[in-house]
Image (cartoon, rainbow, N blue to C red; front, side):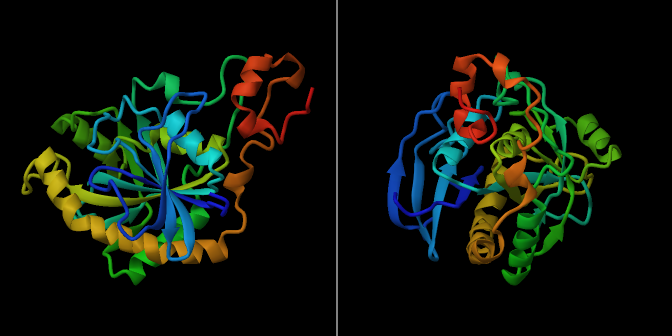
Amino acid sequence: MADEIRFGVIGGSGVYKIEALTDVEEVSLDTPFGKPSDALIVGTLDGQRVAFLPRHGRGHRITPTQLSARANIYAFKKLGVQYLISITAVGSLREDYAPLDIVIPDQIYDRTRHREEEYTFFNDGIVVHINFADPFCLDLNAILYEAAKQAGATVHNGGTLVVIEGPAFSTKAESRINRQLGCDLVGMTAIPEAKLAREAEIGYSAIAMVTDYDVWHESHETVTAELVVQNLTKNAQMGKKILRLALPQAAARLQDCVCRHALQNAIVTDPNVIPENAREKVDLLVGNYLPRR
């Protein structure tokens, strides 16, 4: 694992492996926040070293609420990942974002309720306030959008992704209200992933694969797990095609971005009062910003 691993991929429902990876190595990691969802698969994809993690574990064993998002993101950071691409299933809340379309979202609206322990790396004596106005990496977003067009996908640039608790799909009332709030997509995992990636100074973007119209659309069938899986199976290869087109461009163009300096002015706690055990727990993340004792 001597080669630099700049890019990570986290695969959601229906994307449990990347068949084109070569020189594959399975890496099991421990983190101060527990074990990731599964072993990370490190390999080479079109000349780029990539770390891949199936978000819900192989065989899809972990619900969105039960995910150890902190362990997942920390594991990518531990491997040296600088940019993380999420391949994720979403429902559409607008007519023109149709099933089997691809969306590169640029905003998030959080409606989760039971993920308090996973919301931040920083507690127990360290307070950090990151800038989260743009929750996705806009530089990486632009590359993914261009790659999706090159891949021949029906792709939409931008959209607000509302994140619900799950694992149940929305009620009709919730779906209608989310539309009234101006949301474009609905999913279950971008929070807290995007927040944690920002705290880890990793650029985070999503290839959102539309599987359904949630439950608001009167003339389309109501979303079911079976429908989601069927459409994901149809769309999974497109998501992987976009990924393969995007990575060489990202490697050439992404030398730096604001995401990778998110902690520079975000740590508000006096370093002299930070407990040593709390500091050690997140030293991988804050070591460059706090004076050594």
